[in-house]
Image (cartoon, rainbow, N blue to C red; front, side, top):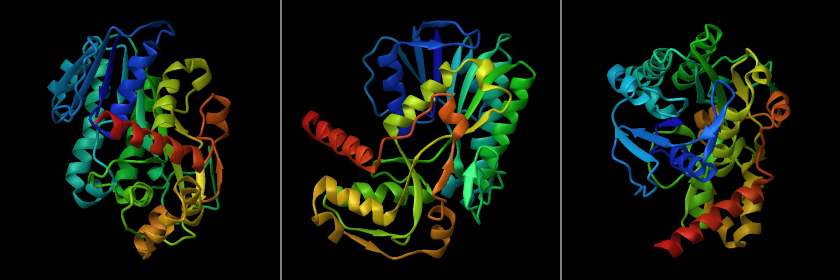
Length: 328
């Protein structure tokens, strides 16, 4: 089976690729499980990783180029479409966001359609499809009204995936991802990057200014759990998924104050001294006003999972950081 991951250089893409190689098998749109014989990783830039597994092939190109998308997806059975630009970049450059997020996804869908037999497609959507002011609770039936171009583009992609699936061109699933942490110390244009910064920097002994208040609430998921949920989306039978292609995922819901408490439990009282709060009203409203009532009943019924706790997310991060330090 040929499997494709677009945006494979990203934080999520690299972790997903490793998880797919470890798993070794996937289920296609015919509900048939088969071994992953080829894992095609694609991004606009050369890979930072040295992939020694013979199943891996790396392709450099722009998914917004229809010819590249067609070549990339030729004979693919499963596609994980993660490529795109994130919130800050899409908001600052409208044309870039439309080209990378909307046109790029349309190219992926058309390349899947050209196969002649349905491809199973898993798409990384976002909770950015919900706009501010946020309601007191968000669940499966909450109306998506994005107030960022990024969220609008993700929602439009969900609608396209639903229509292509309705027509039988592909079997698409769109996961509305929460904040995925802990991202590396690399600028990627995400307005919500602070949700990783405030974890990563104090735990590494560096000072950080948090742009939202201690009472600000965010939804978080570890990259390990994110990769597992993306793969799980590929295993859910079509009859169980149904016609509603966009899916709200469960997540850990916590305030910044609760996060600081968890970091103290993980690394001692010194971390609190490294974090100072200087709220930015715009970021506070857009990214730190998430309701505590996250009601992802449909996802839970389908077998998707949240991390066990903030402590578990931090434990994962610290273990990986230590392992990386030992390896280097």
